[in-house]
Length: 124
Image 1 (spheres, rainbow, N blue to C red):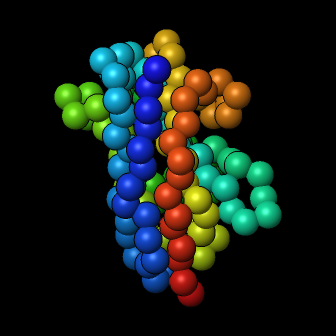
Image 2 (image 1 turned 180 degrees about the vertical axis):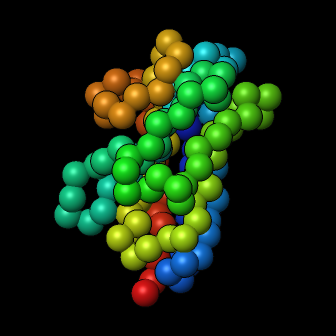
């Protein structure tokens, strides 16, 4: 069993930056594909970014390309989401997710473990 705990959310002005962290328990973190998803109020949860087990392959939804960067530190069992040039439309609860067997994925149903979420609010 893997537990995921997000941190780093908060309130920021448009154009600002935040870095989200997701700390994972368990010895098998380095073999997991990891992803970040978000859910705005009244909307479905959507894919943001994903990263493979080694950190060599990353994927982003089009709306965050060039602004967000996903990375991981397997020695620390942690995955990060650096968010720059934030916009009000980025406001959402951000969730970290883990999937067994390697690569990241944009498919929400591919993930086996989920964190509790962290709120990101971007003011205009």
